[in-house]
Amino acid sequence: MLKFIIRIDDAHLQKGVVNKLVGNVTLKTFPELISNSDLDANPRKAKVSNVTRAIQETLSHSPELFHNMSKGLLYAAHSVKELDRSRYEITVENPSREGVLDGGHNTLGIGCHILELTGYPNTNKIKRWDDLKLHWDQHLDAIAKKKSSLPDVHIPIEIVYPSNGSSGFDDFEASILQISAARNNNAQLKETDKANATGLYDVLKDNVDDVLSSQIRWRDGEEGRIMAADIVALS
Image (cartoon, rainbow, N blue to C red; front, side):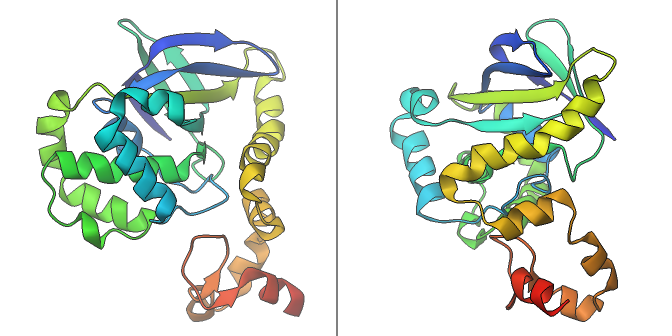
């Protein structure tokens, strides 16, 4: 389990079977999301592409329009607790199901932009999300010192979390995969990615030789010479 505190401006709560907190974060507060998140819950693994480059271009040249031009990110949490001064305590209990559900490329692009603004010289070496996390950790002290001087770019965020009802957590668990799949449908989410997100491949992962497993592309965006669909067919 991990907990972190993040400021969310213009926040409002939408109650339902699954609660949703909607608002905006800024570049100043976004480092908390990257430092405390992975993309394990996202059906895809984000990688540098024309999409991420366009995101960085907008952040550089039209930052005041970014919150209108981008859908930001969708985040799932075990709980959300309102604090003072527009701050919220976010709890993630199961990173394989919670975290960034949609908006992985936004998160990657924004992370690269923050590294550049805080003086990191090796952003050209970042090709995938795992690269970002590696370089991010190396530059963490500088980010902490300089994040307060980052420009006030607003980034849309939605955080879904269990309602307070007796079945709140069960409803949340039953819904987050559907929510993630629906949000990713506009990018033609593959059936193999959906199956991997539900855990259907976990038995295969546990029983395939480690050397072979490292060469299998279990979800879109990962490296590997063997497609998950081929392993499923053989099994």
